[in-house]
Image (cartoon, rainbow, N blue to C red; front, side, top):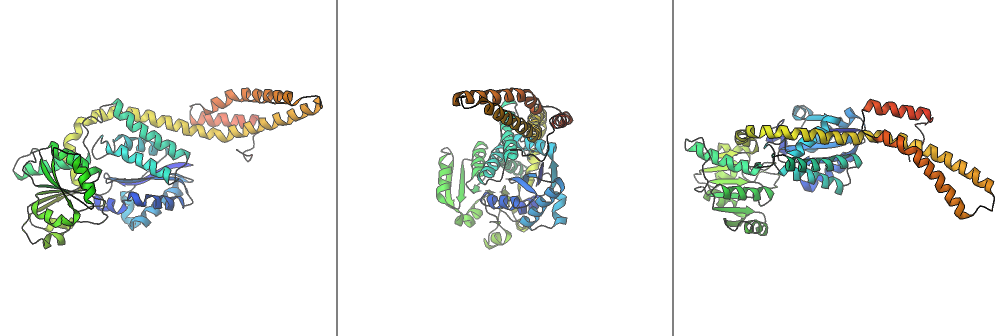
Length: 436
């Protein structure tokens, strides 16, 4: 068995590639089934966010398993091998474990230390469990990754003041507003006519940060009015006008700054739509959705400036240096947590030998007990038989305790393998005996 992760992220692929690989939560179950249907894949889980798609698996063979995952990604995205492969990364065994720990802690995020990725790893764990695509190995790995992410945030300052994708988007709007006025600084957004399209988690964070940056009034559009009104109710000090997505055209003509964050798999704003407005626009669009909510062709429209998640790097880099030292502190915790998982996984290597040893001694115990009981004759009571049987089982358990404990204890792989060979030789344990 072999742990492998195959994926791509903001570090390896532009948004136009990432959006083709994105897997909506509603279809995660179907995708997991397709992965598990591949003969090489024993366990599988999927992490799909605006900045990454990563497939975590337990496979039979490293090369054939990775090839099977690559086949799935090409089938899902419709992207050719030549176009897709340069953007993919692959990690095996220790590197795969270390990568997941870094992801969960927010050290591999566009925004260093962001908290949202931890909830996304939790969701990956939950969906894997619900769809029964994971076994004991990935379940243990993902559970430990979640606890590691929590530990890093509680034992270091990495999560203190950490910005999210949403806050970086608001900061980008401030920066661009300043640059349009010839200033390289973040300006307040109080003069902007702001609209937010979508009422999900990312939009909630947008409203929170917009309010903190001077916005006192905005328009909130969503597919259902009820959800928009529910979100608006959580911001009593912010004047929020709620509208259906059907009112998007009116919103585009009356706004100067529009943020989009919807689950739509197709752009909801494109050049054709803006041209049909038949108005002179002065509009900044900031899209934090993946797949993108705003088509790339809007840049051809006069008076329209458009930005997507990849443009957030401009503001992220301004805050990154101050957090690097804290990130170094977190790396030590990640190495410790990764080591603990690998030690547990290595200990599983001893299980088949331990089972064969236990079965061999149990066979001897049972056979010798039957011989002894047959000599006792009918005068030996049922109660006495139970006492003798319990005695024989107790002796076997005492004999097994020390070798089993030492075989399972943390140790170098070579040392464990040497110990297993010695036990198998001394007790003449055949590998084809039952491991049950």
